Image (tube, rainbow, N blue to C red):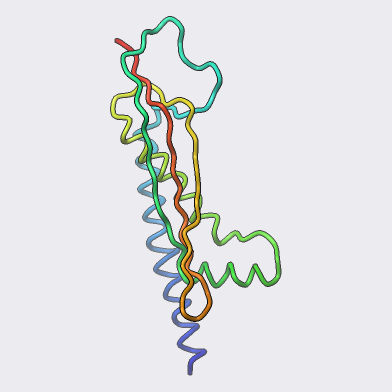
Length: 150
């Protein structure tokens, strides 16, 4: 009976997490990425245009904390036993990275470009009573938003 409950729980978390929530978040990210397509966020040594005067420069940042669902955690634990790439976590980190960049761009307001963009990650973990861990990752994107004089 416990095995049946476990399998049903995995199926439900897979459906809710992967099929519904994750796809909805990807759609939201794609729409917002199109809105900020004309605001480049890049890292380069000499990027400022010499012939344009800078009106303002501000530090902008965006961060997000994401957690994995139990289904992905289960798949990741299986992969840890057998070794290899943990692809079940890739979509979580991809969404977190893209979301943090979008949040940074949203805070840039009317900037013309974001230079020296960096992405930092950290792991936030908490052990549960059964000895497993419930993991979260924070992704922080930051850079300098440059606005040129018109």
